[in-house]
Amino acid sequence: MNQTKFLIYFIAFLVLQPVIDVLTAGSKLLLGSNITIGVMLRFAYMGTMGLFLLWMARSNKLARGYILYLVGLGVIIGINIFLNMGIKDPYYLFQELKFFNKVVYFHIVFLGFMIVYKQLQARDWDIEKHTTKYMWLAGFIIGAVFIVAQVTGTSLSNYAHSKVGYSGWFYAGNEIGAIMAIILPILALYAIKRTTNAKKPWFWIPFVMLSLGMLALGTKVGYGGILVVLLSVLIGSIIMYVFMKLKTQQVKSSLIISFGLIVLLAAATPFTPVFGNMYAHFDILNISPFGDSENEEPQFDENGEEIIEEEPEITDEQIQNLIFSSREKYEKEFNADFNSSPITQKLFGMGFAGNYEEPELGKDLKMIEMDFHDLFYSFGWIGFFYLMAPFFWYTGKFLLHFVRNIKTHFTYLYILYGVAFLLAVGIAYTAGHVLTAPAVSIYIAAILAMLNVREKLIDL
Image 1 (cartoon, rainbow, N blue to C red):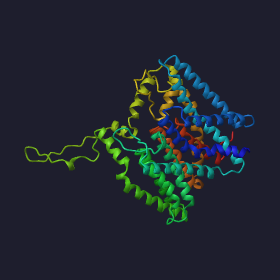
Image 2: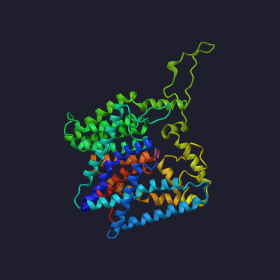
Image 3: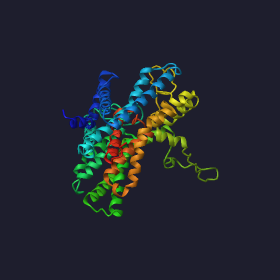
Image 4: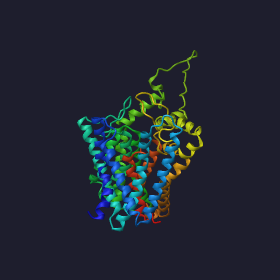
């Protein structure tokens, strides 16, 4: 096998992600095992990427810097484990190590992608074209799985109680929802590049397939992801057409198709699971968003005047609950634990699930499920900023580069890859399961690495 093919396989692994996720669901449901095919394959991939970085470090200055960083991250985790073993009682070492493994997956894969993409770029391999193609294939597979699952009536339920939603043949609804939201802009980009006439929108079919799957989920992330992507294409097209005077067939067809899909989405909204789920959430919080006056008989006082009752105001707490789905309550608990913890935990973190106690029978230890909060409380001030340094650094470099070159970079490629990245960050902040979930973090790692390498921003 020549070296170029070996490097391409690292990127082509993106196509296998939905297949691995379906196999993971099968392992959990049929075998009841936590050591699934997905866990083994992703661990093997991470290990291979780590070995590749070590191999490249022999002759590559950038790879050596990344290896030193990862060694430092290992030291941070070692300190975290050592300190918390003496503070937390009980201390569940396996659970802690499992969490740390999920966290470092992003870092090893992201830094590995940086070297892989740089090596492929040096071989004149079109890194953007192929990354788009591989993500498009992954998105097409996910959309097809959802449709087959719905048609055959074999889709898994995404909710256990009063809400309605389906996750296809995927086990983790939150994770597959985040993946679909991240990939959807890439499917839009693929369609835009190939659609030359609004009367022939065939290349948008995979986009619609994936969107239908996102609506079936019944989550705010799914619905919001579709709306954000379509509005981005529409607004971007208007800016290009009106202000940049780009009156090409590509811009015209993108404007017309995105507007048409937004109209269809608006018309379909009352019939989507997320619409009913929002009302279910309102009922849980005892909120009547549109009032009940039209369904009630008017009441009159002793003078014959109609009694007008004021609608109760929706509180900030209720709004936060609608957005974060009770995650804000767990965040307050973690914050209280963190503020009362020893200085060592403030600096290096409380580890997995905070300063937990013995869980009740049948209940699992819980995280907040808001990635940036989870990482901060788990790693502390020193650990968090060390952990997030590569992510913040390369995100900042690209954003600064984009702003400086916005006149030449305001294209569908940068708009939609940017939307994919921003959706990932937004979901990580509000709903979690992005930076702490290997099935999801590989996509954001590939996007951020590809953009930085494509713009030649990673030379030391």
